Length: 165
Image 1 (cartoon, rainbow, N blue to C red):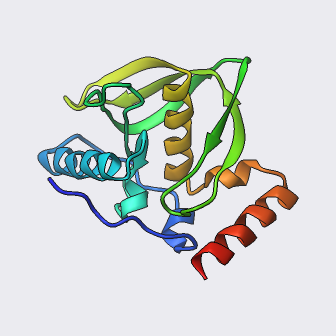
Image 2 (image 1 turned 30 degrees about the horizontal axis):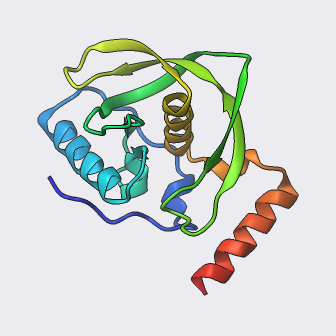
């Protein structure tokens, strides 16, 4: 397992919905391993496979304080979201140097195929919930800044362009 290169905005793959994963195989487990290594190297609290150019609905999330608690997910989908919102400063290694406050549900229930290939439903709260939703957006071809008003999104993208020259 080893860290992989991160796609940079505006790579069109970041706007392309990822394909469903039919089954968890050794190849999928190897991709998850690379994703965890990549997430740890950033460092970050989550990563979607599309961010490393793998167009499959795979994500990893580790919002634990001690690390090493990564949850591997194939085909994650939100089944239920709390009405209580949570605001958090979000960023992406695909668009380095900028971030924005994004409001998402504070808690979500997500269904996914786990590392053993069985369907699991899990509740996520706080930073875990924010990261899971952020990764699911990536898998659908959306970026966190798509949740901003047009004016704020345009300002963020201008700032990002200035930083990257």
